[in-house]
Length: 107
Image 1: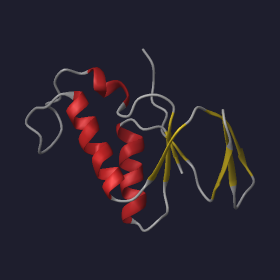
Image 2: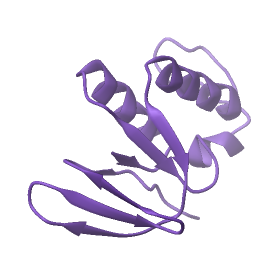
Image 3: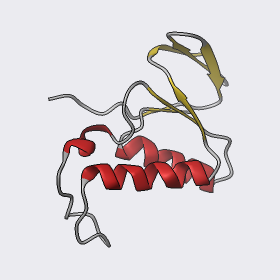
Image 4: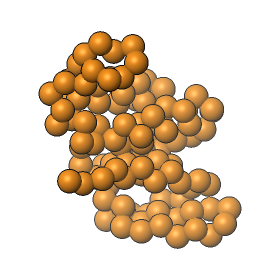
């Protein structure tokens, strides 16, 4: 499970899917995080220039095309019970073997 769908969370979901894991990506508001507010991204290898929104859309498309599950939820807590992790959200709880927390930052 990946909590957060900014660049780090989306990338983590891509790598988890490539590793053959069943992946659930949970995001509370906007896919892409703060980069969606960037009018121009030009420091990413292989991409001369594009908007943050475009880049976020491409990452999300790749995650979805690889078969990851996506939920729009606000995660409120996580309990580590060793072999399983319990993730609490506003409307339900989830169980996972591992949780990557990639919730980003705020200004």
